[in-house]
Length: 289
Ligand code: BG6
Image: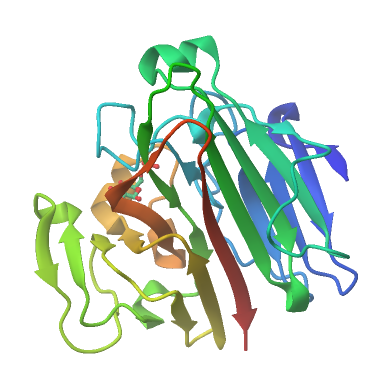
């Protein structure tokens, strides 16, 4: 189902027979909304988000590719999140079974301008699908289509902004005792101590070798987000907190209280693809009481 979104940008609306739904903007291949059967929004989208190139949309699920944050020479988080993707009607078969599910296939190929900053030819396909029980599934496939025989390397993240009632009441399970790189401390490596993560100040950490399942528990809402991932060994946890929130033009001063980014990613070890090779990264969310 196609529709016009903010500023006339094209979006695709997915609906499940039980009532869950999702919205995907072609700008960025960006999921901006995911609602459960009761119509409750599960993703955070800033009231100040700018739906206009070259700014990436603040909230939802930006796709970071071919570079995560400033881990390289490109602009922060690469360029996939602020390019126009196309709908692909008949993609090569996807590994995941999306029979009877509501889904859309998008594709991004580099423009001549993109190839000036990142001189590689690729096909990036993403399938966004509503899963059973109102879950959301994203499957990315990136193929090296270089004709010069050259491999390329990239880092990647599904930069998901979850909507939470109150950040100080939220707990994340699955990352305790793991090693992480702390972006707030010169990317130094530390080991997480003790219990589930809780939040009382800004956080910007890349957890390494994470389990395939991570849970975000929102006590106040009595809701748990369960995230399952495949091909994505790292997990970024980010909340800007008050000072950084104030410094961001496209983010409300108090909005940090109502969001948490938990990003399934491949960062510490870049993915390298030879011509003809394809990489897959899969993410699946559910929201349970
Ligand atoms: C996170 C990074 O993933 O994204 C942070 O770890 C960064 O360092 C944040 O500040 C937001 O980035 P941007 O470019 O969307 O403002």
